[in-house]
Image (cartoon, rainbow, N blue to C red):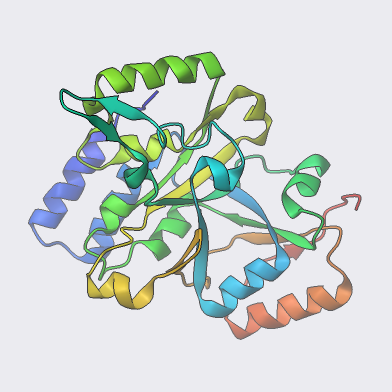
Length: 277
């Protein structure tokens, strides 16, 4: 179920950290090592309700949602969450580990089918953002977060039949060490696994570990956890390649959005594709 880590990128990252190279160089290697099954310069897209995007832009934040089966209403979401691994004296539950992970969903198709607009706008005015894994991770990997290279991952979702997922869960319960690697990428990849009937979404998932109970000043002072959501610091200026307006975005809302983007120095093309409401 796992792609092999980018060993060369991980070595470059470890070398740069050991030699205390400039942060920009360290971050570049971290982005290369933590981008999975997708090129870090490939364009990716996200349909999101307009009012949520405006809230994040105003707050200079990016909001993630908890990756647990109940929140995303899919029993196969975060398939390892409820797994109990038998040990000699008791069972090892993984839910406390996976409760610490949050995600935001993007996709790879350059053109969004009308069905995707309907499915992901939830009947609200929505827009479609365009960015790349590199542009996103550059703004999420903070110089003052000492765990930034272990916290953030982005990767193309892998789609499997339910029987294959169940067989994999059995194999993990027999050997939980198969989840372990130096960067934590295998745990992140387990959150990038969905059932095959969803493959038309061609999802790309941005994942972060929140370390909810972290006592480190950067995390305590700059990150907010609100219910099943976490808000991370995010400078939207330069993060977007383009924005598409959904069919329910009227002229007043369009102008309001443009005013906000100008105020926050966010400059990118804004288009309105021919999509039926």
